[in-house]
Length: 503
Image 1 (cartoon, helix red, strand yellow):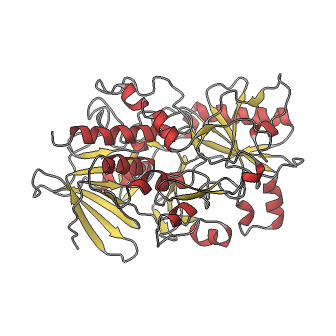
Image 2 (cartoon, one colour; image 1 turned 90 degrees about the horizontal axis):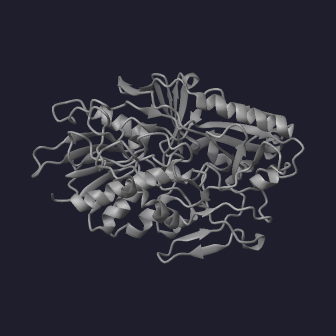
Image 3 (tube, rainbow, N blue to C red; image 1 turned 60 degrees about the vertical axis):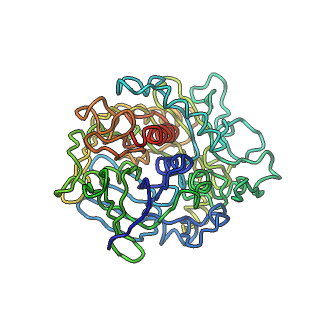
């Protein structure tokens, strides 16, 4: 079936890259169609936007049906629920996690926004890419998301300052410089859970410390791009079609001035559709952006060759663990999603943080396990990995050759966790095979098609009018939470598209 759709730009995906690109392009006067394979999630902000069809977050018994969407286990691809929230890719040396929802990963993130740890992050990748062109958006994103630095507020029920009351000479201490958090924290205990309404009529609550984890933010205390960036342009230049999974992008030589045909499946009806536009923004998240690009190379109307596709792939040094606080009176269920950053003397390269498990007490778990989990703190490290890995595409499946044993950052993080255990007297544990939500690269910005897939504007070499605006285009690991880098890149790509339109 073929749809005629009057769109100037088709945006594929609606996470940080897709929603921001759609917002900027719609505000610049372009007609934008957003295709998202996941559903709108049932949050207070989304309900207040008048969205009728919504899928629940995986809290309570709903976790049994909506926690997992798809499992990729070797050659096996098993879709459990097309409205499920998480997609898990399992490779020999890596587990990769992706989120499926309007709003993408921002519906399940920890709310952390930090600049890349390397001040020269955007330098040297393309002669025409001025780092200031991207970095100028950092402050705008922080303001848009309502992000403020974490501070040692005594009334917070749970924080890094309460978990690390060690002596000033201790090796594990709260970090002197804390990340910005895009969480609507109340100013006092009395304001927890209070509702507010913004200029667009979007409602949200302040954090009530009972369910703003990576399972989602039902009251909207944790900012997500579905209501921050899509709500202001929905019906005002931007249209969102959810539960629509893009399979391939083909060149459309029959269109005046060229263009592309985007093939997708409506997951509710299983019908096949095609929409066309002269310009496409691909922002489906690293794993799915790479899948679409690889799958779109075949056939007479396939995309022009991309010799660097799949190269320079990384995992941001993500490593998760837990800290068992058996004698701890503070409950991890009564918590904001992020508790703050900490430092470990002798381990300066990684970025370390703590988190809670708000809302996990609603899950259908044994009581003994819940009691244990209430006294457990999530700990995590991130850092710069090499980008030496690559992704390939065989028989319709992505394959990644990542070997965490060749990445020293993981041993550094494990060593720091061991130091936390030795100093606190409470046991720590870390996953053996890294489970990473922050994959990057594979369609990197580079000085030519031999060094990358996209140029300084985010346009794919050899495929004019096709742009990449998500983490697959990042030139290196951010070394900390990469959301701010992705958001700034998406702003840059969309604004450059508007500035060069019609040239």
